[in-house]
Length: 100
Image (cartoon, rainbow, N blue to C red):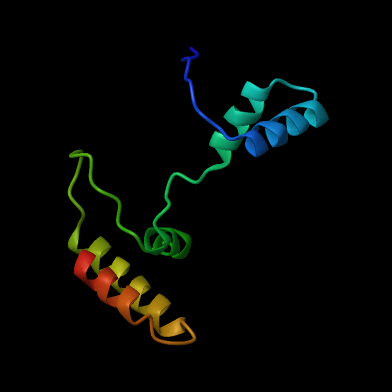
């Protein structure tokens, strides 16, 4: 299902959009849809770093609770990751600890 959207872009953006669509041989709308698909869902760099390291605990959907063993494993992986960093995270580390 497609949903119609309207947006305002400046003249430079319009020219760029037109050139890209012509180069790709597609519509301007297809270029915009492709650009939206390429935007990461997670724009928070701290969350992204935790995801990349595989140490962020996802919110539970209510299906089951996280076991104590899982929490301990996550904590171990977190500290292994922090200790492997070349320097202290400073404020980022404080934010991460606060989120825990």
